[in-house]
Amino acid sequence: MRVNRHSRNQLRLQDTVFYLVFALLIGLLAYLSHRHTLEWDWTLSQRNTLSAASVNLLNSLDKPLSITVFASENESVRAPIIDLINRYQRAKDKIDVQWINPELEPALIRELGINEDGTVIIHYGERSEKLSQHNEQAYSNAIQRLARSEERWLVFLSGHGERNLLGQANHDLGEWGKRLKTKGFKLQPLNLAEQPAIPDNTAALIIASPQVDYLSGEVEIIRNFIKQGGNLLWLMEPGPLHGLQPLADLLQINFFPGTIVDASTQLVGIDDPRIALVSQYPKHPLTQNFEVLTLFPQARAIFVNDDGQADTDKDNGGWQKQPFLLTMARSWVETGELSGQIEFDKESDIKGPLVIGLTLSRSLAGNPQNHGANPSDPQSSDNAAPAKQQRVAIIGDGDFLSNTYVGNGGNMDLGLHIANWLSHDDQLINIPVKTSGDVQFQLSKSMQILIAFGFLLLIPLVLAGSGFGIWWQRRKR
Image 1: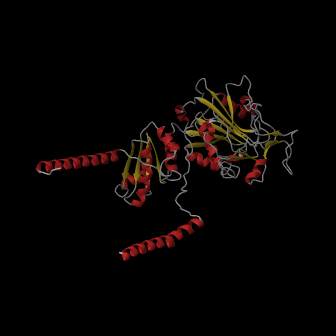
Image 2 (image 1 turned 180 degrees about the horizontal axis):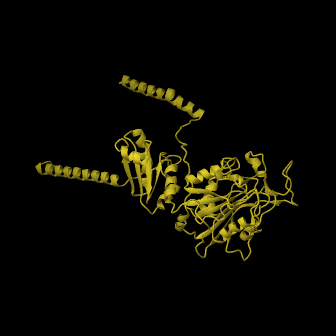
Image 3 (image 1 turned 120 degrees about the vertical axis):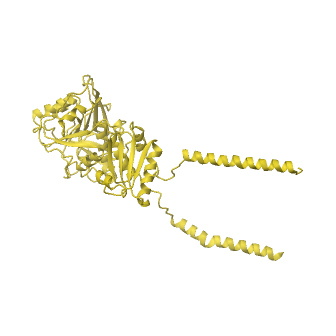
């Protein structure tokens, strides 16, 4: 090609156009990177992204969600908050975040009662909640509580030796009660002898292992509550029903006499055969994606038909009955004394698997009627939303939620699932705790020796050999 002034001008023009297009392309990519992001979380437990439970919760919100952060300019305070909030903003658009320096707004800080640097207030609709912990569990639990359309009152009966959801004794359910409060539930004890009416905004009535017989009038109040569409959790124990046989007749359920014994406990290092294990769960909304082992000390079995379905007849009041807790095949109902050598007697004992958890549900033809007064505010009953489906859960054991055993296996999680199902909060599930299993790099002994040999001996020898080879080649020239 012959170079002249015309060709040089063409080359300059081509170069100019190229650089202009290149700069335009870079600017366009910068603009797109600002508007759109691509991210990958390669951590073992996906700890830098929200869990599926939190994402589903955010997708279920139908009102604006905003966060106000009261944090100083200290980077160590702001950095973890920014990182966590960014995860929520990536999962859901239009989460407004406002940053306020407490040092510049002392009057507002006093008014809101902010006493810790890094406090956040999450706003949802007209409700808000203040937090000082910065992790996914705390944030998502707060959003769960704010997303509830109304207060959820769990009313538990007292005065007959029942387990107390606010109690600290080993047999009480205080630890479960504490977790329920963190999920936004309100707990209220009720002695029917003192207040002969069940509050009309009760999300679920809890009968937790009574030790003394109920009076006939009290039983009739409970029966009326069920007839009018109330939800119920009934925790049973081996032995008498303590006056609640009319309730069992209303629900058309029967129980086996005796206590469940499970030989499978020896396989997991449990010496007490009276503890029944549940490792697999029938398909049920209550136990969906629930795969954790649960333990039930001194449980009783609920009678079912040979086909595995709950015992019902044609006139069952519209109930749909479905087992959700089944013991293992090596379990049985022991009708004899639980002492000495315990062995299965095929003449008198009932072989497993056995149903120890049963749910009953039915559609309500009309709105449930009022049951009584609100535990805290008699006027708030007008705002109670009627349930579209009546739900009852019956479990042949109350020890599994007691302070002694609730921390074993998945007992606590199962208790939370039951409460959410009874109160029609099926979408509110427990936020899983993410562990950091890949923050440490551990090598085997042989790998350590191999790396040490490579870096301390092999690589130096290779470098020295290559240097000697180059020197030798040059020397020969």
